[in-house]
Length: 219
Image (cartoon, rainbow, N blue to C red; front, side, top):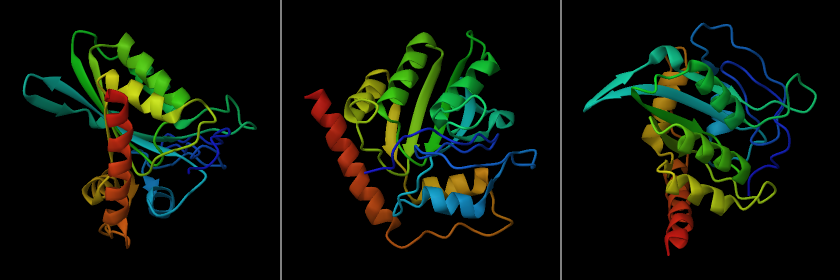
C-alpha cells in the first residue's frame, strides 16, 4: 500500500509531489533543477513507503528513427499540499501543466519519459490518459519505483489499464533506471549510484504485480 494521496504539499522546478501526501519543499537554486541526493534515496528507494511522490521527466523529439533529447525540458516535480498557493495537487498535475506550457509543435512527434516514485492514482492516470487522447503527437513512458495501491481516488488498477489502452508504456523501475535518474536528475556531486539491498528483488516483485494487473484487464 502506498501513502494516502492527500494533498501534495510542494512544488519545485525540481519539485516535490507528495507520494500522495505532501510535505514542504523548496525550489532548487541549481539552474538544471537537480534533486538533492538524500531526497532521491528517501523517495525512490523501492523498499520504503514515503509520504511524498516525486516525478522526474524528460522530453525527446522523434524524427523517424532519430531520437533528439530536449535537455532544456528536463525537470522534476512534486505535489503541493492544501496550505500552499495553488494547492493541493499531485505531481502529475504539475507535470502536465509544465508540458502544456511548452506548446509542443503538433507537426512534430514527441516522447515523454517519466520516472515516478509512486505510480499514478486513478484520478491522475485518467488525466494522463485524457492528455494523450487530446495530443496524438505525444507518447508517454512511465517508469514507477513502486505501485500506489489505494482506491481513494478511484480504482487504481483501472487507471493503469486505461493508460495502457491509451498506448502509454507503464513499467517498474530497475537498477538501470534508478542509475539513470541518479545521473540525470540528482545533484550527486560525483558520487556513483549505489543500489540498495533488495532493490532488484523488490523491482521484480512489483513488475510481476503490475503485469498481472494489466493482463487481467486484457482478459
